[in-house]
Image (cartoon, rainbow, N blue to C red):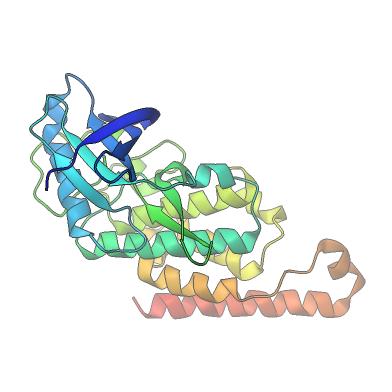
Length: 284
């Protein structure tokens, strides 16, 4: 069956496409419709690559689902599931650390799926991590979205320019140096995203005053390590974040200063955090 789509609310645009909220006419289901910019047929091959990559990730719970596509229109179209809670941009500086750890865990497993098929996202940031609500539990599910600048598992023969390799503030140091984009660069971008979600700023120094478990700080710092070899893989990261979500609330500064036991617990936390990261590194 061929479906018909109407779109009615502009949601945003990227390098060569724009996204609209729409509806599948025959079923009434809400969808997100991504259209190639007018007069941008030169980018058609990248649009096709995006659809192929999403098809290769079909069924992955933490990657936005492709529902349909039509490349025979004047403006080629990709139809995606509509995530009704927007993006993690709305969470910046507003959510408890445990919520952030859970969101990053979902994103990490999404990236593990992406990297598992030989693809690279290349533009991880809060705006490209969408929030979908689960119908039964009322919990949220974070989904990696917007593969418009992804390096795909299918051979790509078009121009790959520096401007398409990410968003300023989230780009890893090795990519800035001109090194080839590899999976650890996506991990760096996710680490900066985590720091921004917690502190409202995109720099590691802002973590020093954050009231989060020291193990979580250690992990975010490891994700943003200058040496990409020192960053955990996406799969390792998901497992480590799952453990961090189970941790107790950290002691506040006043409690630490009034209790010697508080400092002892902090030292123990540091030791556990270092051990956790070492364990992750040993599994590479």
